[in-house]
Amino acid sequence: MRKFIINVNGKSYEVEVEEVREGAAQQVAPSQPISSQPVSFASQAPKAEAPKAEAPKPKSAAAPAGAATVSAPMPGTILDIKVKEGDEVKKGDVLLILEAMKMENEILAPKDGKVLSIQVSKGASVNSGDPMVVLQ
Image (cartoon, rainbow, N blue to C red; front, top):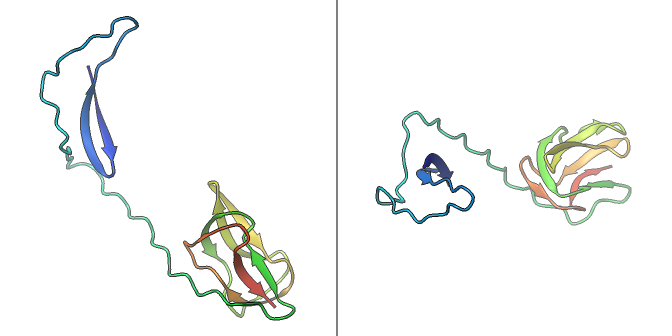
C-alpha cells in the first residue's frame, strides 16, 4: 500500500492505494474504515487569492468617423492596459497585453492617434473581434 495526500477544491485527503502487479489482482479488505473527512495540515501555506477583475466599462455604441477600433485578435484575458484615455500613441506602440493560451501578446496601435476610449478593463475576458481600444 502507498499513501498519498490528494487536494480537491482546497481540501486535503489522505488516501491509500494498493499497487497491483500484473496478474495479481486481489480483493483486499481495508485495514481501517475509509473516511472522506478532510485532513488538515498546520504547515500548509495559505493559498493566494486570484486577483479580482475590475468591473468592465460600458462599451460605446459606435466609434466616431475616422476612428480606428482595435479588436481582440483571439480570445483571452487582459493582463495589463498600457495607455489611458486621452494618451497620444504612435503606430506600433503597445496598447495592452492580452494573455491567450499561456502566452502574453502585445496589442499594438495600428496608426498614430489619440486614445478616445478603452473598452476593456484589466482582468476582463475577451472574445475574438471584441473591441478593446478606439483611436482617433
